[in-house]
Length: 326
Ligand code: ES4
Ligand code: ZN
Image (cartoon, rainbow, N blue to C red; front, side, top):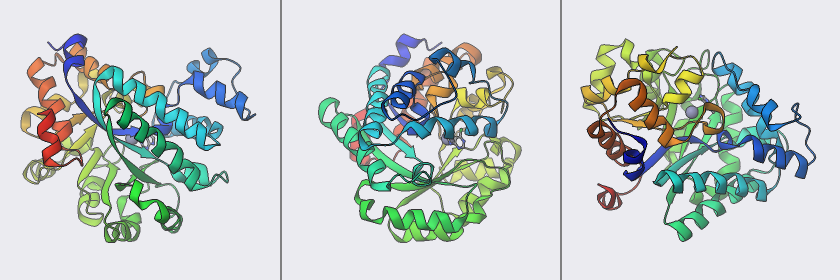
């Protein structure tokens, strides 16, 4: 069995991390004071007590509310730097982080403030600790495609800092097909493409993401287990799944970690990876996600090692860079 000490020895890449979801209650409080933004909690304990979710939407409501304390470039820097410190503790040597510009631009925050704040922390972590990174801009799928296009256009002056685009927020009722045009535009701009699919939504949404958005990676994707032909396609085409175990149990995708299919998918030959999603809300950073698999599914050292190697294989770093961590 892979224990925490062993997990720590493995260099890892993280590929599914919403930077706004790494906002810890302590920093949320500090920023609420600093920026004089009211939050409906009077203590860190009260915030933590509110983190009981029954599905994706019940989480998203609280997550968007929490992000409202982020105003200045320095706030985005502090948020990102706090996450990168956790990467260092967990031996995460490369990270590809999501951000949700529309959560901020809707409140009147300039997209440049958001991108510059996050980017400068990423650069500092690279020069100080050698942690490499990419930034992925996510469109909120509960909003219109037109608004996604406006967001992509607003990001154009900063494209040198952006590796790709993604699709997140409320999945049910907002299929990938809704965003075909904006993903085609992103491809035209030379951006990589990923999408959340098959988290709460059906396996059909995974197929749509592949066929209509031309994604090279699926975020979550666990509901592929309902479609045998799709599983075979994901294996043949080597499409990675960025799986988030503690997220899935926190949002009741599974009642208990013992039901999680990640190791079965790994054994079948899918390129599955382990990620934290929204660590401040779901009970832990990446090593705790690995640890949960050991505790509930008896993950072996060999399996843990394979998952860590997959994380580099599924990343957007060059082959040469990958060799370094193999
Ligand atoms: C998210 Cl777990 C999850 N699913 C979809 N959208 C999200 N945004 C932040 N976390
Ligand atoms: Zn996610």
